[in-house]
Length: 159
Image 1 (spheres, rainbow, N blue to C red):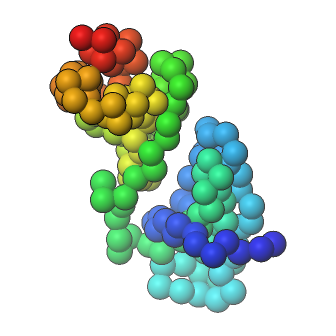
Image 2 (cartoon, helix red, strand yellow):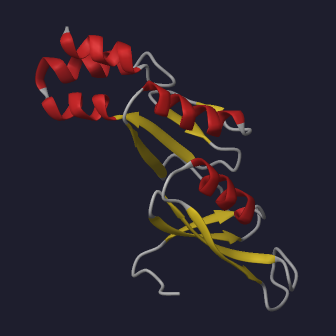
């Protein structure tokens, strides 16, 4: 197995394998590639425990590290998932929130492991790229939402 030049390392208390398997089941072009067990005892685990998990999320290489409770995820890092329509937006949002996650604002939610996700319809990013009054209307509409409502963003874009 070739190791990517750049890999995102995500710190978990002890559930890296569960998280990786959830992501692989939820998002396209995602899979668990390998599970590595600790060759000896370490501060947050014992020999034979799952230490790291190699996986991809939408084609992005990641490694999950079961490092213990020392560090927590924050909104300073998130995966942004571009969606094409409301059905896809709902599917990902509901999978994350419905699996013990939490809703936040403006298309953000957290999974049950504390990792932040931005479920972002392309119509919203297209509106921001358009700039001007269209971007302002879409932005103002988004600021009132938790999960993004595609129809409301489209209506705001049109004015």
